Length: 470
Length: 115
Image (cartoon, each protein chain N blue to C red):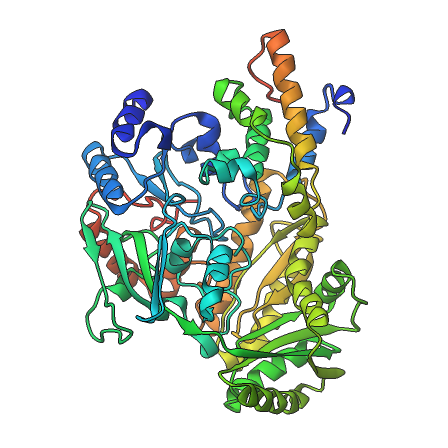
């Protein structure tokens, strides 16, 4: 449907003010480009970018979009790793970046925040209240809390230790796709049981609603103690994780690893001597120092199960910062050397090792590209396997990039199916819709489509993500 | 990069921009992004993508593109972040070269820089 850009701008300006509407092509392009490695195409280009300040403006935008049958794509910061951030069709991009209010109510045990607040800044803002923000994405410098709760990802945190961020959401203000504004949940720290729609909107990936305000619990910061363990092989770390769950050992808040090759790159990136093999790094948490000391000591003893070359509690903060940074920097520096195509495999804990070996075989035997390398690192204690195909060049044609990404995703998703997992830390729609159908069946997918139709009869919000468009 | 030596070096420019991982860590440190309350095209990452798609032919030179390139303060805060995250792009140099293409366009009257 042809859209009159001038009229669209004029109409949207009546709602949000002309300084908050953009129809110029360069700005549209900047909002169309997300982290996906392939190029933006004309079908991805927004007609307009609109930047509302509150739920009333969003309600009016959505009512207008329904009347004109123009899709609306929600933009947090565009850091999704499965393409949620890229508009799949020409649309209005609704940027939540101006919605950055924050009110902290220590006497009530919660804070209320606008969806556009960046996670790194929110963590700093909550620090004076001794509060833990249960959100640890690698993109925290720019990722928004609205996007984070929309996907409901644990990111670095181990689910069994900290649960999902949505478990800390007490209530929300949302705008439905047809423009109705809803208040959900409670102002008590006692969350309602039974049918209460907060949990329905948490993790809904922008398909059911636009989140305009979040009420989240203030959680006391735990005491942390850090452990690093050096291993000959990644397999030893996998054995350790499997034993941790089998023996019912309390899981650390973070349990990260670098495989044999990634550890060398990561350690050298932060100025440390390359380790002899794979490295695991853990943060043990407890509400008291005594408890934390005891827990860390016990965990250190438990680690003997994996025959580490060395395992130790790290008390020097600078040393720990370097070791911890090596995990993040490994990914950055590997990318610097070429191109990477990632996956997320979250299988049954008793099948972790088998799945890891199969993932490595898949990555090293791609049909879409020959001669790539295999790297892995990430949240193994969760357990998540991030298996990466690495190609030592940036010069890869767009279609080949798409083919590699598809092959890596589809084949590693088959591992999630084979070994009882789902993946999903990066979100379950957009590129992962074929997986949903394969894993759960057509009836499951139809249920999602019917829910979408009920809430969004004109398919206005994030059109293309539930359809699985690239 | 010396701008005077970059005549016809658009391929080099695309190669430089291809080094960007798309992590967007440079976005929030950009003073023009902050001053605009978070408009993506007013960030370092946004400007890199705008230059890339100018060279790809998706965008042409227009007033909006000129404004977005010339509003960069060349403060290099984005480069400090980029370097700390392992990519180490010369973002301000790339934007300068984008400006050079723009000024040449004003002389020659061409609107496209498509390769």
